[in-house]
Image (cartoon, rainbow, N blue to C red):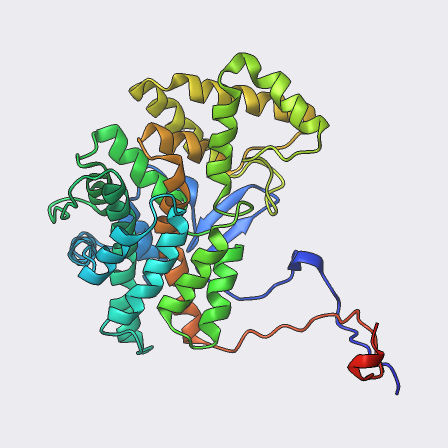
Length: 380
């Protein structure tokens, strides 16, 4: 038999392979820029609320005052969970990874969603608002349950970020906390065709539905090379303990060939454009709550790694200290990332549905041919 060859080009990790056409976001790796629907995030950060950003990603334009008011109200009105999902959160093992619980809870929501089996544009719009709101509530309720504190209802008079913070902590954020949390969510809302977003679009292309696609995305985000890196960065900071130990610790990591968590990026050849905004928030917040030591460790690590390796920090590095200063336990860092990125995943689901084709790449086969079967008694 003649050997069959696949002459398609194999690219390890699909680096620089164009796998989708999108209008949602653009990651300019060479110049260190990130665009949401044509807006540079430097234009939006600190000026645009998370709800405005979500509206932009889903509908293509920033909302008017009237549109924003109606949109905010619709999100807050959906921030409640079916009682069965709350019961499931209460039954989860106390040491279970919150990302595992979040992934399972989002999948479970599909059983109770009135539009669960419907993929029409109208049904997907209703599910979009419901799922974005409910994802935040899952995280807040899980935290409250673990803290043995009462579950709180959202306040319809305030924003999505403020409600998320309030239902998580049991108090409303002050002005700096609200601005920081809102900006943190906005900066994580979308980032091109990251692993979780690609997983999301692949699942959507099978017409499996929004809950399935988000479950796939959450599964990918959980990994330490994707969303889990922020927690790993915080664990590194805690192990270092203080600025005086930074140089010795980082040199030891580098000499052992270990990766410094929160540094380097697959796409950016210069600084991640989200880093400067989170660095500033980390600085302000850490002073605000008395955690300057954490931020000082970060600054020293950044200096050492740049001097020795020429590698820039990515979004996870100062996201860790920003979240710590917002009082978020490190085991919840990746869930906060997930709550924000749900906005982008939903935008990609909607876009994929509009012009869907099953995503089915090929592979380069490197096995043998024409092997002969033998009875089990003759196999060694």
